[in-house]
Image 1 (tube, rainbow, N blue to C red):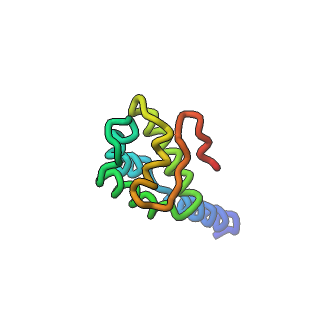
Image 2 (cartoon, helix red, strand yellow):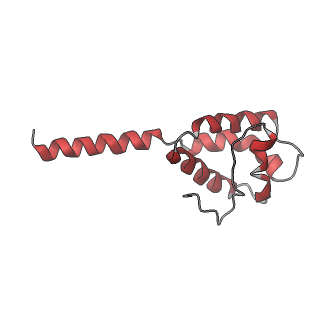
Image 3 (cartoon, one colour):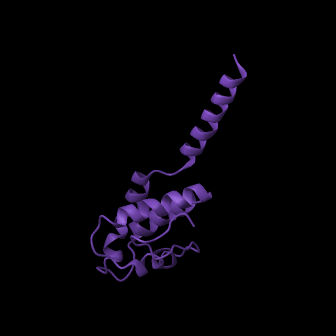
Length: 113
């Protein structure tokens, strides 16, 4: 096997393993869907299901790549739920007893930071 082919395979495996480490948007949306009522102001506290989802995502957010993916997916998912209060987004982890922080996510949020 040529050296170029070996290098190409190595690059493919490295980039593929990096892509597999990132959490999917479907998972993020599924986990935060129960938070919709709270984010839209329909409830005073996040539900137990919301907190369970946020706790699961917090456990998945160990790498910068996953945190960026989660934030991007949240931004995309929140854009589909209609009116919501971006200032309630950072409240969810706090109200669920987590030390994790989230920015107020809206259409202008730069999720790369």
